[in-house]
Length: 465
Image 1 (cartoon, rainbow, N blue to C red):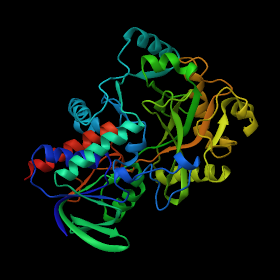
Image 2: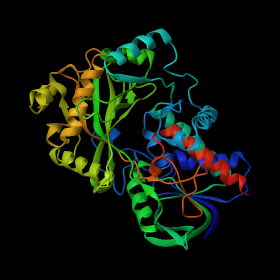
Image 3: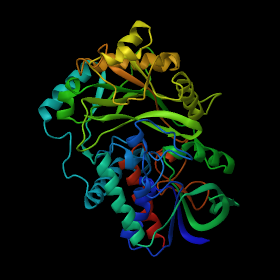
Image 4: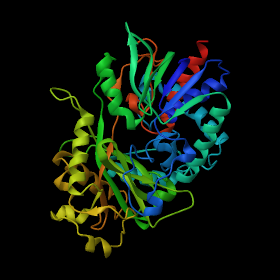
């Protein structure tokens, strides 16, 4: 097979690459490869069974058209300050302009016109003052919340648009390798129901998301694609009653706090806050179960959940951050017999495990019912655990009650980012014809910034007719 552009991965970065090429009236033939299913065929059986079924060969929450975006809380961060390091590559002004452009596209496909976090500047000042007193930084970021169920509809409309405009999407097809000859990427080697086939293309765009970060790292090593060690995030998902987070939820919707707690001074941050949301489980390769959070537009719980992530960087002699995080996750899964572990914050401070009967009589009832009560400190590295404890106590100065005895911590919350691929401002790697986008490239974190990176890639490909 031959094509002009082949896109590996149908997450936001890949989707917006194709979308922008269409909007620029490109005549290039586009093939998109996605090992998961079309969005209308993605279904998590947990909604029926009440427990994770460890679907094979992949988790339907993380894999398929729009990637994890279809089943995420669907929050679009509208500031260049949130979502990764792409602005350092292309410039802050260009990043913000592209985010604003992508936001209009999401609105065209049905995103809610309401923007969270901009309604009460005076109350925001008070929250910021308390954050400063606690040694934390509050990052202002307007949020457009699609919601889990609405995100599914919006990406479904985008999928139909791409198909109607001639994009060929190969569902259930996996990319095994790249075809690289004399420093030039000629295309890819695919596996379709066990049958191997080669597809040649002028430009190959790899946008495999966090789900494909480990795969891309191995590809870069095999084919000498220049890359540098990047960051891996290890942490927990925290769940409290809505009453505790009420003011922050109303004023900001998502409180993005950053700190460097003593004694290690590592970067620790909040991420993906879900007012009235639900804690969820996602499964990665090798049966690795990780925790995440969702927030629906209409369906609400009595709790708010958010991630607290501790950033880890490695250099000499160890430079495999993804493998490190996976080992932490595997050890936690072992303690939970393949399930997510949950523990009360007070029990952590008391040096004891949490028991199911204690959760049953607590004010904070878990929204992930099949999480196993236990001791996450038996698996979490000491450095990360101390950072998380001290950060939670700092947040308590901003949100009184956040560090209460009954606050729930779920583990493992892991964010895999590929070792950062070296590229120029047009996203060209040292291998001609190869471009790497989105979270798997190590440059973005989240739906909007990945969408922006895809948009810029689409423009560049459309220009080179």
